[in-house]
Length: 445
Ligand code: COA
Image 1: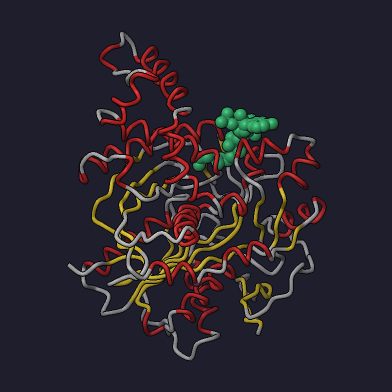
Image 2: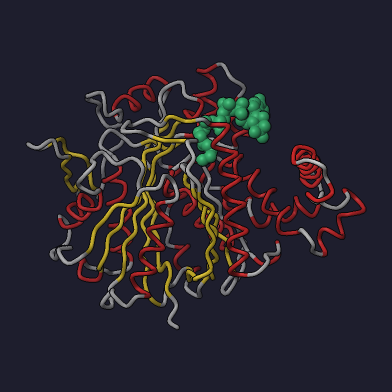
């Protein structure tokens, strides 16, 4: 069977940076370590005055098409995953296609376009849709363009304000991919939850603490479902485990939970037994509460073992390097975690061709998906082509006062004129509203 998966990706960060320790914590009068150590975040990316989900998505897609030498005729499908859409009818993919058509002679009139919504998991769902479309033989030799783009803004003063971010990830899904092969091995954990939602409003209603519990519960359910298809997992099975990363501190919790699950009934659990005992088994307890308390105690001990710490440093920590500089990109978050891991492998000069990734995606509301991917031979060239570190370094560092203006500028209920802080250069920009209140875009050479 021909491999199908992600052939290439490009990342576009919002061009502004809010330093959480220096600027945000200082203004709030809080200990900077709450952000850098507790949440694990150093900075957030924000869109400049001329940027939005369309420009960031179109700019990422344009870079991708240029680098891979593609024209619109090569693309049979454009799916945009977002939870920051500004239109309940016209999908963001049409705006992005419209932007790209300004710079290509051909058009996308024969490409199927859509928009995927399920909080932060929609980017992964769009990859699944693209995979299924190609596997079904409906692609006519063409590739799918998947764009995950979000401006993750919270209401001012919301606890989520520290985890904001903005950026886009464009991914090309093809046969014989250069980056990773997707597999049919998937597991889901899905339930009707009200942890985070935007009932026709721009900024989310969030029960932050509950959303963390729901993330972990659904992720565990998805792992069990994955194992029912793929067989038991073991910590040594995967080179990296990129998780959805609303903030790195969340992944710290997910990593520990995953490790505990994976070592159950393995030689690792046996080896650790002298030091911290064996994992509590539910049947050994009279009630659920007592069992859960015992599990929490075991996890506390597990966290400090050398085995766990070494595994986490090698398999999970490398996935967080981009996230801690840019914040939450919602639909793009798990995909920048994959990119960060592969960048780390390249920096370490490791040959990871043929190694596997376990990818843990999550969307509030709520659903988790766990799936496996296999790293392909062309990964190194693809990763070396990314310029995300340069983009991160080049962001304009905003003051708190500028942050307040930027937040207002992107607030749909406000109409604020604001001069851009950065000079557009070879990119799409927001150019104002048209006669039907549609958003319009220009390409600036
Ligand atoms: N030094 C070191 N760590 C510190 C600290 C300090 N001075 N102050 C706080 N911390 C730690 C806390 O102990 C906590 O870590 P822990 O959970 O491991 O104990 C972490 O920093 C966060 O602090 P907390 O007081 O819980 O933050 P908060 O109440 O402001 O909100 C969220 C945290 C995640 C609830 C909030 O950011 C939010 O609502 N985010 C949006 C929703 C979200 O992303 N959910 C995730 C699932 S999708």
